[in-house]
Length: 230
Image (cartoon, rainbow, N blue to C red; front, side):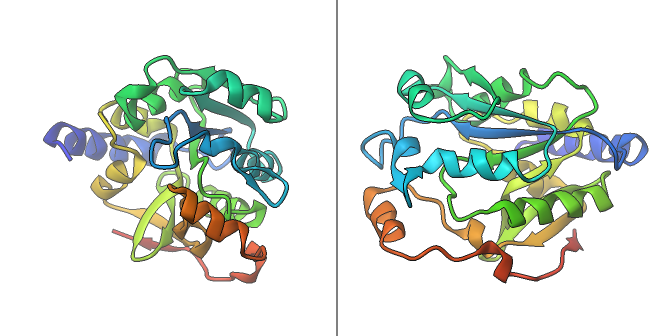
């Protein structure tokens, strides 16, 4: 976490209190640009319950109430594009994907047409997150659009998360493998949405196989209410 990022986050937090609107459009970014080296193959296309891992995120977000959606691809972009149904989403082919997660975020941000849009940041390797989870996150952000809203799980907060449009400069200050979680740590207030389904991200083939062997658990079984924490 750099001093510049902390200062930028503080400045935009103040700006967000004056500019965020509950009716602002919401653009979702699904980040799927990595090489999946630990997985040893194209992780985004690994099948879970009959469809590619990435497809679970695309389908859930497409039905959760976002206004637009971008899918950021890098390594294996051609293969992934051919293996998924984008459901009308914008596909961003990110040539500098090897620079890390922060570069993928910048590529995704460049695809957002509305300057006022809130940004929902999601990852391709969290297939347990369902429509209801995303809807709860969106509702929590709509209730306090001047603050970021983030999934809370395993004593931390992270993706998926939503940040107001005013936080874009802070996102642009991230570098390397820094993602939105680093920004969330700098913010004075974040609406936390309990989301046990976000605790699992699949990195290896063993983790994928363990998930394949499990029966699906409906996300609607979780009923914890959002909280705001510093």
